[in-house]
Image 1 (cartoon, rainbow, N blue to C red):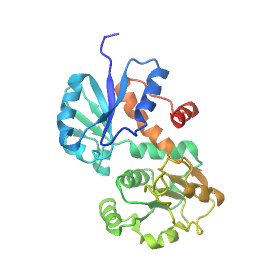
Image 2: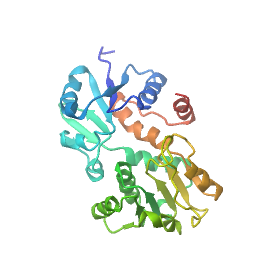
Image 3: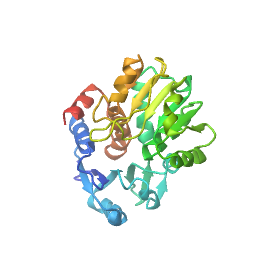
Image 4: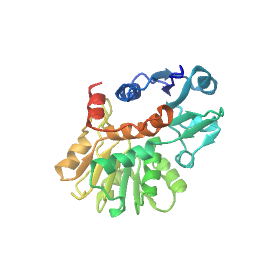
Length: 276
């Protein structure tokens, strides 16, 4: 051993709720790696100062969560194309040359979750995306990348959805929130990127009566694991995929870059996080 124990963490405000330290801690123990991953509560005014100091403290990287995902792009020395396209970063690497490298693995985590947990063909037909926030940007970018022919987008505030259409182009068709149920007809993929249905939030009340049983339906919410939205889709015979896998898969590339081991996302990993 060199005596240098690599450190990483998740930066946010608030951040105590994050399951990332439990997940990375599990992988560190599983693979016998000497390293640590911690919660780091950092206010926005202090973000750049903290990021510049972290490599001197032994940090090799960090995850970034609310409210820093967009702001960190202006601080980073190197921004990947996908992070620039999404307009946010969730994974930082402190390089040996002193440069701060910013990437976004949320879209990768989203797609990998569907690929591993459903019989999913992104090119099979239109995708419905509910919500136009930060998570929606990553989902839309990744869906376009894997060849979804059309994205039907709806948000409670239409102007935010219109702004995403301006950015991502003509494959995005915006529908008024009150008519969101109409988007389900012929859809092959349906994604809830809003916080509706999460514990403590109102339920997502978008009609699914036009939804085909051939559709794959997923929700990025994972508390509860099976939202009312997913349960209704399952009753219609759809394949459903919960949001926990997105959390797990988006974490794997960062762990590999920081600690030198590609972690396996498997049932043991899921069960550990569900119990933590």
